[in-house]
Amino acid sequence: MAMARRLAPFDTRTAFTSPTVPLVLAASDVVQIASADVVLDLGPKRTDCTLVLEIDSIEIASNDELYTFIVQGSTVEAFTAGTIRNLATIQFGATEVLPGAAADSIVGRYYVQFSTDLGPHEDLQYVRLNVIIAGSIATGIGFRAWVSIPQDTQ
Image 1 (cartoon, rainbow, N blue to C red):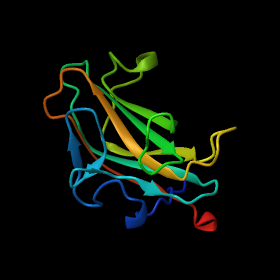
Image 2: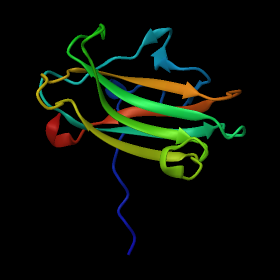
Image 3: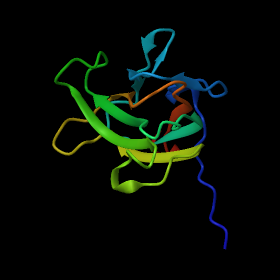
Image 4: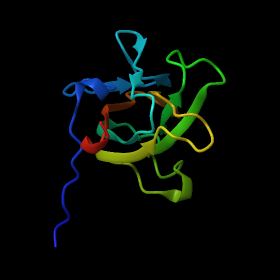
């Protein structure tokens, strides 16, 4: 029996990157467009979401590359210190540095669920994508990223 394909439509209002041109990073950074951090406003109430990552290229030739994608939330659009919470994390890289000796990462589409309600904290209206890169990086990682929100919660 074939599994149903996940529905995670691209929406320009919840995009971290271009839908067609991969963003390539070779150093740690918050995802930016035109030198400005991309901050999404998901609204003042709890929102259950899915981060969709389309990995188009990944460099792991030195066997020490590690790429950590962190969805961060804040009650403040400027993400000032003390207001930032990590909502979800996914790692890609070489098996030699991935926790639990996970297999080498490959290109493809990945889904990471998260909520803007993090327990006792207030709802985190704003989200951004922070990418931490470690290892001997030459070309880095190429990806497209967006947040998919179920239609019944929009």
